[in-house]
Length: 121
Image 1 (tube, rainbow, N blue to C red):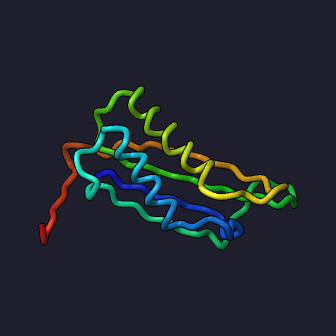
Image 2: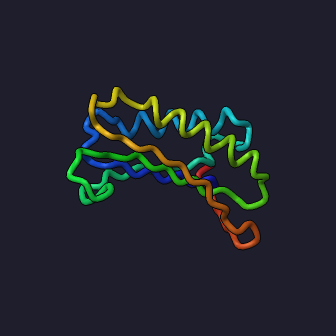
Image 3: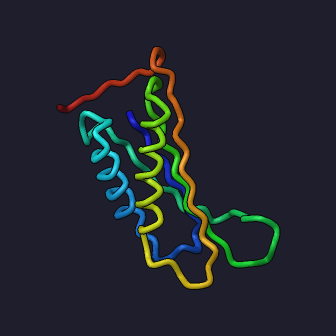
């Protein structure tokens, strides 16, 4: 915990997903909400098949979903969302004229049923 899923459209060639995940992980640790940096599991997926709206315009998006254990107040979730959104917006030099949308979602994982094990530590 937490689990971070980032999806981005494949037309964002300037986006470097490994760098983006590292920057997001640093931003999450800076919030003070997570005990260990090794607890953050992040992954990114480029979407080859996508559609933004209905117009034929060139569009793109980057969307992050952070799953955290339930029980945190809305203000904490908002702070996490804001920190991630700032990183997403600054992740690359976005091409001029490209309509790029950014989104962040914070999702609660059921604390009583969550399980975790770790080997090799």
